Image 1 (cartoon, rainbow, N blue to C red):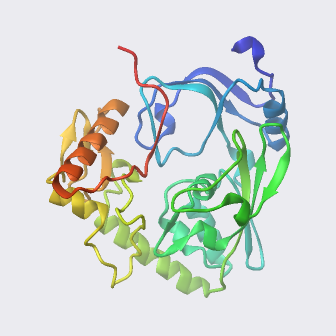
Image 2 (cartoon, rainbow, N blue to C red):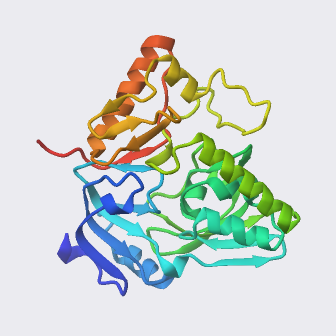
Length: 309
């Protein structure tokens, strides 16, 4: 592939392991990792990249398992040139590499309520791509436009309607890289917004294994909706409940474990491979189906090839 790739101004690394770029710390090498210098660099690279070479945009790897055999693609990871945050009234524009938590805090500083982003691990690009949400709020509720670079190197603005948001899904053109997003949040008192976020963080830390290597919720709730976090939220069909009922809380395989603290969190105890993690997840799905007739759906994205034996 080396002879066919364009020469960018940014950093292009061949055969780059991805384990240190995912929160679960697993993953084999990508054929190439490209870190563009700026949007023009990204445009030119995508425009000149042969159409048969696949690309995989990657954020901070907070909701991702890269299999042990790696990715046969050019992985595109945005960095400093794509993490700016600006505010104009109730409108917040953030680069795709900006962390969700930073956007929530900066918005709160000026009285814009994007507090639901505070406890979501990851970056804005991933939040838009996966329609991230919690506490009853979702990215689609506040997004006004998303800016992408297409595989042909064009810069386009997409509306929420273009993205066709669904639970943990949206539609982006094949090979497109999301570079920024603009949100409009309701007005709020900065002090009250920060107090609310502090309470949300405390509740999260009390109920989730935030100190462990995880990728957030492993499976969707069977009804297809995330927990609202409200006092009247019901728990009869939550993923953690059916996993508990199947006796899989704390279950392990190699270095992978379903967290004893929250059974819908798949964690790397320190020596897990991607195969351990995905394999344990499949064991949980099988056991839950056997005990309840419910087929759990993965919420964590799994990509790449298994390690060849």
